[in-house]
Amino acid sequence: MSHVPFEPVEATVQGSARGRDIAGRWHVSVTTASLALMSPHSPERASFTFAVAELEGAGMSEETLTLYLARGESLTFRDSHRLGELSLRLDALCHEVGEVMRASRAAGSRRAGAGSEHDRFFAPFLAARLQLADAADARARLDAANARELRSAVTGVVTHFAASRFPDDAADRRALLAELEEYLAPLMQSLDRLEDAAGGVREAAPERRFAEWRRWRTTLAECYVHAERAWTDAVPALGALPQAEQGRGRTNPRGRRTSR
Image 1: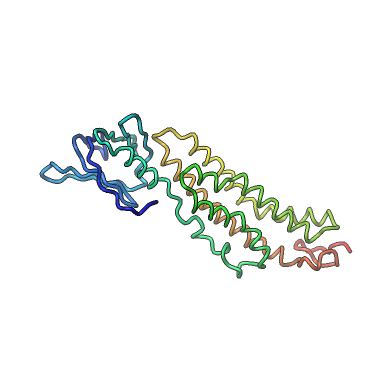
Image 2 (image 1 turned 90 degrees about the horizontal axis):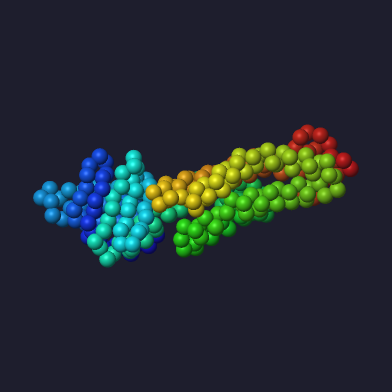
């Protein structure tokens, strides 16, 4: 979101918020974390401040902006030539992604596993993060973290891991792949939820746009956490079978000998 200062908009506001009716001319300001209303004419300088989590959605119709709040309340803004600018600012505020990998330590740490395979496993997630940082709008961010593409990439990576260890033994290759897929199951389930959440954003009515985005963003962060856990769980199984040793009678992660 741009950090360029946003000059307050003066508009006629009508609706309800926190159980109170609101009407009249108000100054509307937006910061990086909230939206605030202040009455320039009331003796008590009445004001309301709404955190991002309280903003459920917004819709622009002709020269009217409607902001939907929690608990079914809403505010309608009109009589200002800057409502389009206000709408864009709210979209930028409420469609932030944040640092989705903040909780993930393994993705950026070589200590979390063997170098090249660690990098290969996390490459799709790192690429998605870079694309998210460059995305210009909400649609582009949804495309950047595409659940189907991430699922396909992860499946391809673990299939490669199994094949590189047992190129000549289909039974052991299938056994290792099955074990890795067990570790991946929570991640794959979270990617299923991510796909569902992305659909919710794309199909959301104006009054639910921001709320659906927050659901998607939370689910995306969970995917990164599950990716870290999957890798951490898989490392012992992969480390027990160095790629140079497959097919030489090494003990596999399930405790039986591989074929010669």
